[in-house]
View 1 (cartoon, rainbow, N blue to C red):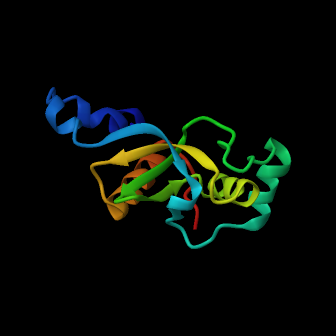
View 2: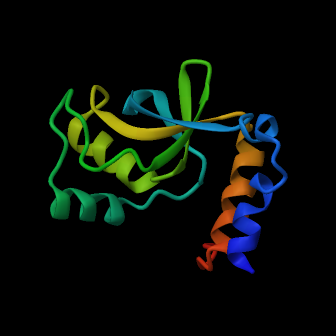
View 3: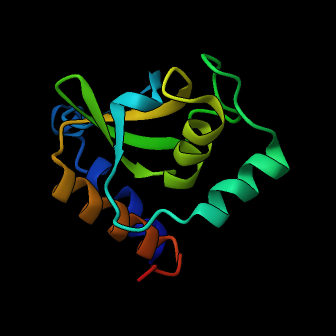
Length: 128
C-alpha cells in the first residue's frame, strides 16, 4: 500500500506534471538559511559537533546533500536537517556552508505537507 502511494504520480505516463517539482543538490551558506520549525535544540546541535566534528570557519559541514531547503530569493528555508544546519552555524560561524537538496516548485506550507505525507507513507513516526 505504501509503495503504491509513493509511485502513484508517475504511473499516469505524464512526465510533464512530474517535472514541476525538482530537487537540486547545492552548497549554501548557513547565514542565508533559516529554520522552518520553532524548536532547534542546542543539545542535539552540540551532539552533532561532538560526534561528527565541527565545521571550520568558511568550511563545508559534514555529510551528503540530504538536508532539504526551499529557496526564497537569496535565502533558504530549512525543511529537514535543522540540527545539522545549527551545528554548522555554531561551529563554523556565518561563513560555513551546508550541503542541501534545494526543493523547487512548492512553497513552504505545500512542501511541509508533502514531506509529512511522504514520511507517513514510509511509516516514519511524525514528530510533534
